[in-house]
Image 1: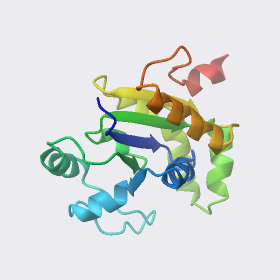
Image 2: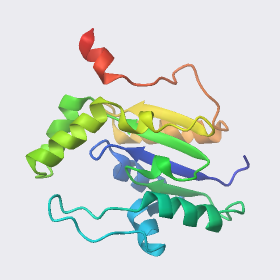
Image 3: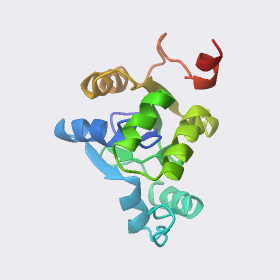
Length: 180
């Protein structure tokens, strides 16, 4: 892969995706939200009154992007969204957070109990990890107690190092941690 690529910045809501994306934007990267992409390709549903979210037709969006993205990108793009790891990107970064810390972060957003529980469970079972595609580069980072600037630097170093796997690459398993 050359110096131009598409990177999915994924993770459960509350793990720091948008904050990290804003740091990339300040450093000259093009950022687009998953919701904006879905809207552009008419893959965004109506507002769900139960949780105030707008469902995305991911299968259709992936088909549209595969057609649209058949050529190499002209510019690097980072897609910020909790399901962006399911898009046909060249590389994926998944931000993770300890479930108890994530719960506190989500409570501060005034989410409903049901929405908080659903997101904490998604994080606990490693939702994005279960969707992992082995064909592209993948980096998982624990954002529980690390400043977002440090997370940005870790991702930026991975990019500038050519997306090489490192000895610190791990798959985070919160259930395993709880059992210890």
